[in-house]
Length: 163
Ligand code: HEC
Image: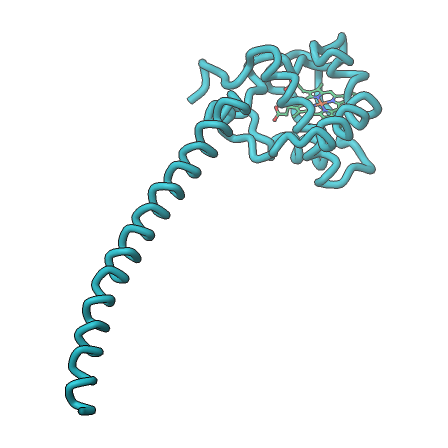
């Protein structure tokens, strides 16, 4: 009695186990396809929204709107007198809207160094730049975010004459 009851029930278990396994297989496959589609969607969408992916080599900053706005204010207060309110330079400082200052030639770190230690003239005839006191690394990062967005708006992503 118990034997004959066990047999069909174990058969039934085996029979129901098969579809369950297949169901799981298809579920995982479907999940994989959905996940891949989502990732592709994010990458494609992110690329088209940003539009600058990969081109701004050497720029580590994310260009968040808050950072750019903070950077604009700091730039105007501490850099614009020489580098120009429109970033096109003045009689006493060079323009950042020159490909020379694109990220592949003057990476973000060059801005940190310039502020911290000043600059010995080597590209122009303006003379040296003195260090700028009172700015933190984060401040300069924000200034760079502002400068990079202005460069990109002007179509400057890299210096073609520089490796
Ligand atoms: C008093 C004028 C003056 C001010 C203010 C000034 N700069 Fe400069 N800056 C210069 C001059 C002059 C150069 C040298 C250009 C050259 O290479 O001949 C220069 C060069 C630079 C360079 C290029 C560095 C390199 O490696 O070639 C960077 C980056 C820079 N400045 C960033 C800044 C930032 C950021 C600020 C504001 C926080 C600022 N400067 C404020 C005058 C100024």
